[in-house]
Image 1: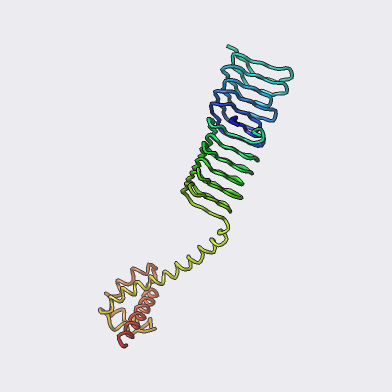
Image 2: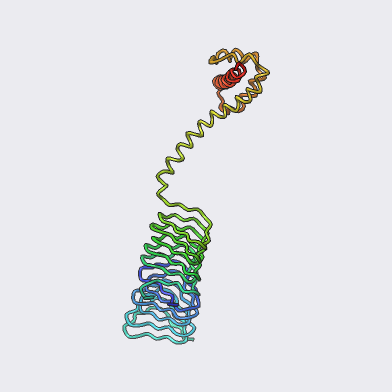
Length: 103
Length: 204
């Protein structure tokens, strides 16, 4: 319940910031800054720069991701942009275009 | 259940435009604008600083901004709101805090007709203005007792102009309209009427 969810019919144009997990089933354009995890589900579309601890992507993401812990691209996801994170996982079937930085 | 509903959690800040076709539960903060075809729930911990356009709104938290709802807006006991509400149904329960304008739409049809009559009334108010000058004329009466006799006859009033220039001089300023000759006649007429009435009173 405490989870923040952006439902599939929701479109947010702007900025989302917070200290908790965020689940995106809809569309977010702009910027996302979290101290926890971001989950972009299959129906989710994100056109934003993302700064979080963890990111799990099953939907579409366009933008740059900076994660303090881990970025996971799941099967069937589509990601365009640069990823910077200590741990990056790309599953079989994932589609990705961009730079990876695992410093 | 949470999967079927959009939730903005307590520590979340959404700033920008939020559009959607489903319910939205705000526990955190939303700034900007919210447009939904369903219901917005602002929980006790929720803060919304936005212009809101929804079907229904239930406010238990804080809302600063204007709400336009196609169905209803409810401010609960814990709700606090500053802004204007436009909705056919508006419920504000005891304990709720609200400051702003309320528009329940149905009255709109009457409103347009409302302003029109007042405008016409304002024109009549112009007549009262003439009556005001009449009051001025009343002061002028003592100066020109004779012009009062010029009942119904502007021409006579014109003739009286020469004898009572000082009295007429104060009268013209109030009429505002630049009508030179026409303006004075009505005034004298009004003054005459007033004078006539008063004279009648005197007669009585």
